[in-house]
Image (cartoon, rainbow, N blue to C red; front, side):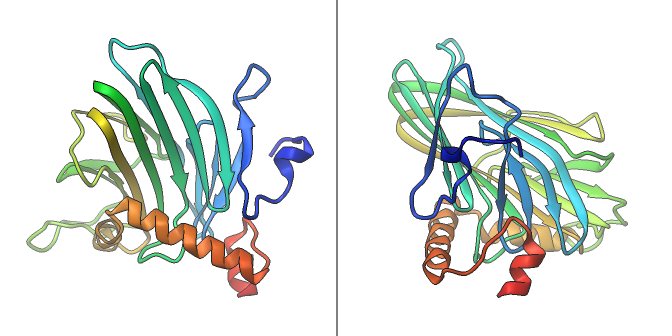
Length: 262
């Protein structure tokens, strides 16, 4: 992480660190997010970089960039980034639209080998929003779409069972549990591009989930289904972080050290 002024490098504790978006804010700044299983960096736009699972000693994604736009509308402008323990929020604004984009490393949930984005959109009247998901896995993977979700695996074995699931050296499941993408590009074995459209009238919440497994597809799927209610997952995670802060225990971006300290 680059050197930051004290206002950006001190402990967040019970109050968020607030970063205003202006011409002096570098896009190269990274902030560390972690739970007891995974570690990754987030940029100032709440995009994920270098997803690492210490216990498996594996990187599971080089970057996952998620951005929102409004066709035939003014461009969304990032206004402020807020840093909380275990999550990051970016507020975007456009004419008649406000969007909160949160990226979280869920903690103490049913499946914490995961990353969660939640878009909370508020609009005046009917607005059509577009969400792009651009993935760089960092290595060639076998990719396919299953029930509207992207499954990416390293060295998958033959499909088995009534659901034709595959064991593999590593598995990732990514997508929106509420809807299918309107467009999918997975021709490049290392990259993927998903596009979702959302009609907003008043307030709408849109989740995006990623789960990983070193056992097989079934484990990643079970984890995905168990946390598909993103709002409840985030609420439980925030409560867990609040309790952790109250205990005064050491918490670091190193998942192995955190396990050793508990």
